[in-house]
Length: 415
Image (cartoon, rainbow, N blue to C red; front, side, top):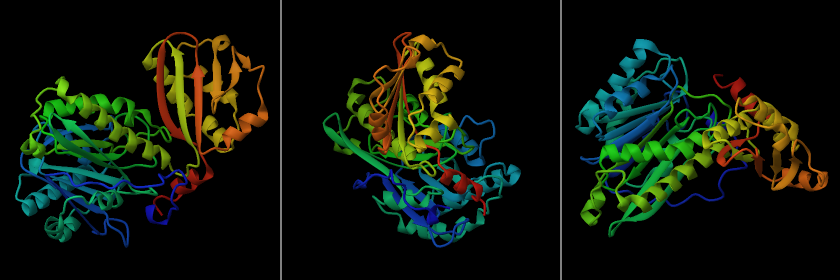
């Protein structure tokens, strides 16, 4: 579990100062959901008028909280968010649905808002009933203690097998006012794109209407969280939500009703930067990871084709174990390209490890230098590039190596 795992060697060397976001207050508590001696519940309170957007797992077996959020998102408004770690409340049948309703009712009563304005997320073990009554014992204190800026504590409370809390922030001009974006995420295993594959919550004081916020989020997730894979397994609980309090309107920020508004250009870039930062941290915290791998596929027939080939490489246990062993085994990359089901020509294929071309036009590069490549493979970040020589399609994904620690973590996850 999270508390006993050493911090990933790929963890960021510093944690950003997370500024408060007007209209957002956070608090954490230890409810004893599963873990002992640590916080496991997060409550976020948001001012009246906060808009909400979300993307969720495409799993056909979604958790009860995901189903709850999908239903409530239709209203586009939020006043509170309740997240627990240790239990995913997934594959729990009627008891799971009852638990979400009870949780929302408890939070609504404590916060003075409607259950339909409460969003929920749960992460942890699948298939075990969630005792929502445990929220009753901490909810009052959470409401009383909620304070601005407690993002790092919030990120810690939602960790499971994560080895470090994940936070990111940015400030950007919207009109004549400066707005703030701040987010947290959790995720280390059961990570493959089909939304975002983890939990992440991003907040801003920008005054953006729910439909515009939804479009921005849906577009930005494609090349951030949906371009990350750890093990090829998509969670039942994937939830990525964005909340905009609109508080910056008091400072002169314009109210945005359409995602196409040109005044959003800088905001979109900053928002994408925050999501990219958080998603890279997820890749860096892959269970048992020792290498961050950036896979770039060029020369494909299309961007979509490049993405599918990159994911085929990134999800290959043989590629990932070779990199764990610091072996530039381009044969395994060739295998992963060939099995992807996308257009490829063996005799036009070129492959690079760490910026050094190791294969060209269907054979080992004539200038291949084993010593030089071996030195690059010892670095903590490996750049793996493939050029198909067929077109202009290009894409990039992040993954990590596959080590024996991954097996150990997942072999005893429920014990």
